[in-house]
Length: 175
Image (tube, rainbow, N blue to C red):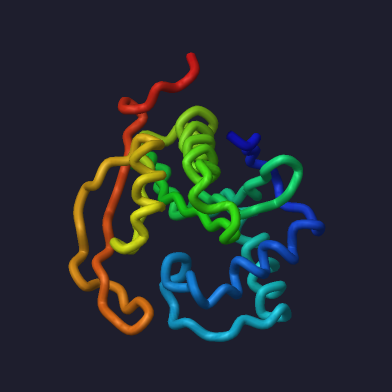
């Protein structure tokens, strides 16, 4: 199993993160907007806007690092401080998928959310055909809570969105 670490983004990570963000093959799994080419200028502007929202604590984003190299990003966003929940998301470069990296990263993100941010619940959404991601989320303690039928337009057809969640009380967390 590779050594998976969540850490802050550096300028050295930007090329990898741009590659993930601009990948049209996985656009619908990562993005609710219509697919289209993403320029580096637009990507950099989006990062700048994201830095502003991070200052307001609406989003917590980590780079997923494996053996010293950036391979993705994992985030908590949509925080509800009253009900103490947030949504999780993760994106990995193609060569990092199917190797247990996503499972390890999402588990670390969940632990961070529950232990460090005092969340009670973390939820996420996955395209139904993304079975690898759904398996990784289940291994990290998420359960299927529902399904939005034919909710997303993905590569030429409608697909269901699988809604998943985990509760603090369901996780084996450090004392």
